[in-house]
Picture 1 (cartoon, rainbow, N blue to C red):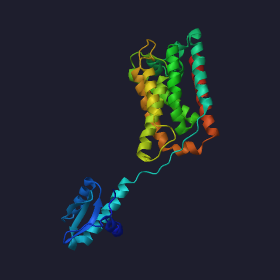
Picture 2 (cartoon, rainbow, N blue to C red):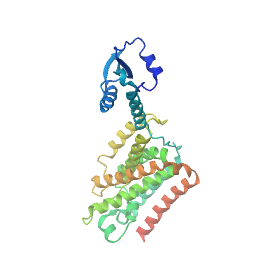
Picture 3 (spheres, rainbow, N blue to C red):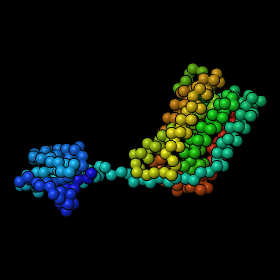
Picture 4 (tube, one colour):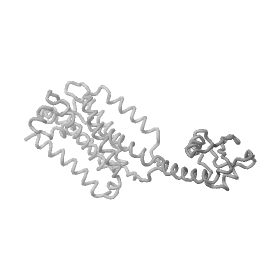
Length: 317
């Protein structure tokens, strides 16, 4: 409990029935021994003595009656510092509403590209190719690779996982802005992945770089909210996050991004790290997403789709 040493009335009421030893006076009361010991250390730092007595399960700090006044003044200052140190940040976050159309667009885009992938050999034009991306500056492969998949299982896994993580991201940034950040995390993750493998040849496809980017975004959000708003509670049930996370990770394990069917661990880590940075920065400045809620969020979503179209146009030139 908090110390009652500053308010004499509260302290007297709490110590009703307690007999202070002759020559001593009570200056503080705590439920826990650790808290009372911290107060005692503050008194010892003054070069003064103190006594700890137990009263109805609480710890009473007593000092020499002749030294009461300076010790009380010191403990009052100590209490102000302690309260300031424990005071949480007060930044408030906004919880956006769910928007289903952005999730429909995500599904339509991936399914449409997958349906044309075999007929037009899109993989060779749009996959991550570390050497080509670095040597020839084909940055658009970082975008187009997110829309390609090795097989139907790979596609369905990323559809389910992507929509699931995006749901939580969208509640914090808004649906279209959230998808834009996920998309950006995936693109930056593919670029980072190509740089890690270069100059060795490396190929990969799949939206899971962006999926892990979404997981990184959520982690960054969680870090900021935990630091800034420890007392805030959202309306989402607590069991939903771990249950969904477990099923999602189960679906991702063993589903490869590489054309050889192996899991591209570096791509997952790259996407996660990029999402983590974007999520932390975005959470700090979430008020900007709230301020421009509305038409600009739709603009962000349409811009992401347009950027995918531009990347494929460059890839197929």
